Image 1 (cartoon, rainbow, N blue to C red):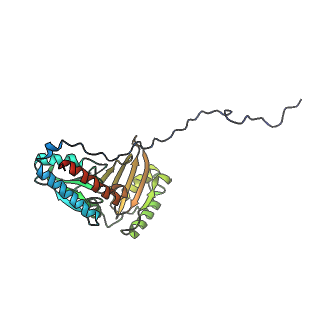
Image 2: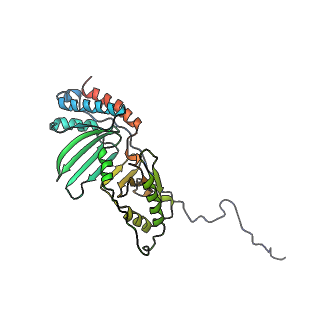
Image 3: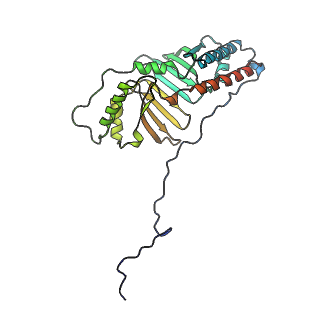
Length: 287
């Protein structure tokens, strides 16, 4: 009997060696949701009249913003320590925070969103001393946008000569980004360059960031996983990087917009905060 001329191969489930194990990238776990602030009993809060007045003013200014007005502010300067402590308890800490560095001067602006979206605590310090403490009501504090505008440099650096090793696609991406920031206008949808989906090397990313530059605004959002936002030295151009719960980058982008939406409170958020703040203030005042 002659050998069969075609080799026989076993096929079907279980017939092949399974040496490799699929490794799935961990995705963000959990999502920040509204939590009512923990407050003292109404009897303990009754004497904090100036805190009550500041919170009533905050609600009134938020209502004005919801009706279509621009950003409003409530100055907390001069509040006694006990009154300020009550305001701090009511506002709490939400999912977005930011730091604005003052450049050469020892000025720093710290921004913390309250548990009420669109209600922002904005504290300015000089040499570590508080010089301004306000509650700002709006989609996003104005200082974040104004600082980004101030950071823009008029000249765009151009690379001369041969590219550094392993830099291949960054120059083409920079050309696309420059085309977009030159034509983008307020009110237009954001233009997003998704670096995660593109064939870019570590050197490409470094080359890109070097030519875009880094500004003074750093925003952190913890709404779903972690998101780090920094302004660049180019008009309306932001670096937006998302991390999972293990601090692994899951989305790396350049966004051309006035300010990325992930850092802003939506209209619906402001309206929802208005209702919630009204309910909490009623409890604070015992009504």
